[in-house]
Image 1 (cartoon, rainbow, N blue to C red):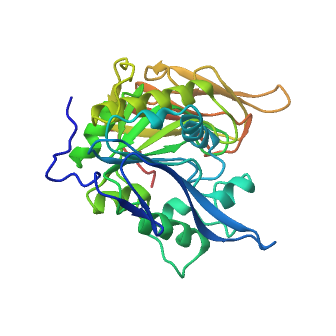
Image 2 (cartoon, helix red, strand yellow):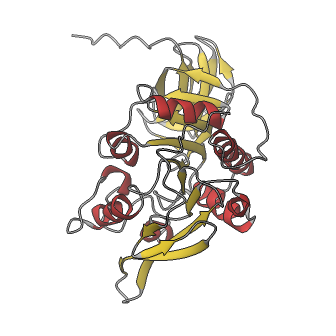
Length: 335
């Protein structure tokens, strides 16, 4: 086991401070960090459950609900808190935040009420937009304390993601976390500008992103895979001793979207988790009158890591997210 943490570097035996609260080794506390008010005047707060083990070790954040409608991530962290998983730490500290974007959650929305994405506003601004303020609170109160973390997400609206981890390939600590997690799919992916992962890498802190399921819909398989992977990461870091081994993960360097050639009704015959071959039929697009049918074929071989669950699509909509280790060739433009 490689904990990735030396005693000369470790400081977790000392008190840590989050929002003016000191937490000693062996303590478990809940800290409410106010982020603002809704129009009724009620205060909106981020709840951070802090668990400190008896021994020196690294500090991990388990984060859900950066996007308010991605309920599987919220459930992974919530269930872990409810089941007392973090109360059995062998060493180190866990900061469990089931829900960061409270505004989006209560409005069944990915974003905050002004339409901005919290995960495109890091490191944030204390006097900026609402999304920037939420990002700034996390950057100010949580990022300085942690050594690494797992950011739990799901597919976007109407899109299902097969359980997968995305990591920054040129950042070795992130690559090691992704390997330890052991998701069914492990994807090399550059961090998006102004995302939490980008900000963390700039601070040399490893955060991997777990994706599983679809927004506003529980998916038990994705939830279970998320909890199991998190336990394996904690075991790898010397914080936990009861993780189940993972099955072999499939690693991919490239992903691409297969888009709808026309508008109509979408009938998939292949879905997430399945292997596909080049020119294999993956779906049909039909008109609503039973008169027209168009085949959708794979443009290259690989594995489907995400698919569209929407029954009605428009031309150009993303239908299948396909991963492979062969870089897709760019389309030649017609002059």
